[in-house]
Amino acid sequence: MLIPQGGRAWRIVFGGLLLAASADAFAPSAGGRLAFPRLATSSRKTEVCMAGGAALPNGGAAPFGTQADLQDTVDRAAQGQSWKRKITLLGSTGSIGTQTLDIVEYLPDRFEVEGLAAGSNVKLLAEQIKKFNPKIVSVGSDKALSDLKDILGDWKGTMPEFAVGDKGLVEVAKYGESDCVVTGVVGCAGLLPTVEAIKAGKDIALANKETLISGGPAILPLLKQYGVKMTPADSEHSAIFQSLQGVPPGGLRRIILTASGGAFRDLPAEELLRLCKEDPEWVRKKASTHPNWDMGAKITVDSATLMNKGLEVIEAHYLFGAGYDDIDVVVHPQSILHSGVLLLRL
Image (cartoon, rainbow, N blue to C red):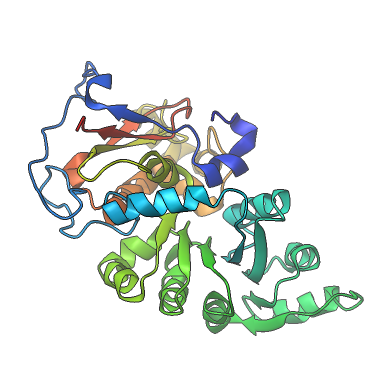
């Protein structure tokens, strides 16, 4: 499925253009970036690990590559149109949150909103409450809560429970009968609520990479301990995960993350250094404007410096168990192919 630039909402949830290529589908590029990797020889449990030295011995957080995962894929597909999921959304007024709710609105027979958490955008949050009727809502501060209640003062609907701050975020994450928690908050603020949601037995739709970057070694055993699934809901890693559905044990050979190159991709280093000295305001504006996508401020700046792609490599390591030597980053300015996997022919 190829989604044009204006369709990022669907690209985020459904992963964009998926590529699952057999080993002989790739020819080495002139620079060698897509040259054939060496074959994995391990016979471990999932064979998720590649030939690199830092593969995770028990695989990563994302469920794929075992007989049990294959069976789960078949069972879920066999549900047809009969399923329905209750979801909780952390970061409901941000980029991930609003686009997730677009999907909920489009598929009302499939999804029900249990809880919402936001920061200070209470005007938008009030609209979401009226539309999706969550049972619990959290905001970032007491002032935000007061403002939210003022906006909802004349509303005739059922008021949700309210919570505030970091504790409120945790309360929403572990609340009620939600089947899945979508973590769309920015930064390490997503770590603790994710931990508590896991302990409450809720599956995680991960759109907060810092959770695994800062806490991967702690998160992975928690997922196994509580029998919880963590699936990537955002962007490149969702494309990879969906490409891996149905791949047999030992089938994954290499992960390919694409990068647009960011706002400064066509600017020589010497010119950027000069502009930093002579026109820093131009540099600031350029860094906060992505050439292809409309995203939040932090991720846009991180994309301009390519720091975001470095973080995504770490995230891919903990999600899929791959060694760092087996995760490639390829600059692809057109952003047509969002990510890929290289598979073994078994």
